[in-house]
Image 1 (cartoon, rainbow, N blue to C red):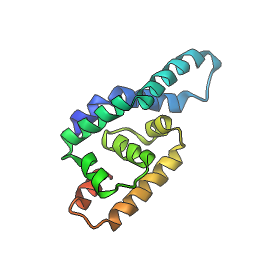
Image 2: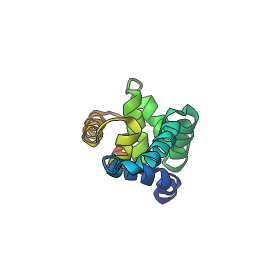
Image 3: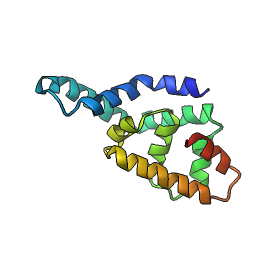
Length: 133
């Protein structure tokens, strides 16, 4: 199941990772970066696409996004997005590009999510921890 979900977003994950790793070099690559950036922004800014991604995650991972919304009703949208992207198999570099934060911020948010989940008193706690490795 995990493979099916990650495979679904593999190309987008690779594009984001490549963009992250290469965006600091050669001027002649500028047009390619602009196009990749445009595609990334289209993905990120399309609420329907994010919703479909969350539905796929729910389908493959025991309704985890729905459970997360119920157990953490005040979780920030950015934290929910980061958790969703992690569940979908995106790398930290790709998540950094998608969310517009540094890779270190992605790791810090992931760490904070782990701490919040560790304090949670819910039957879903083990499920959240299982997927947030």
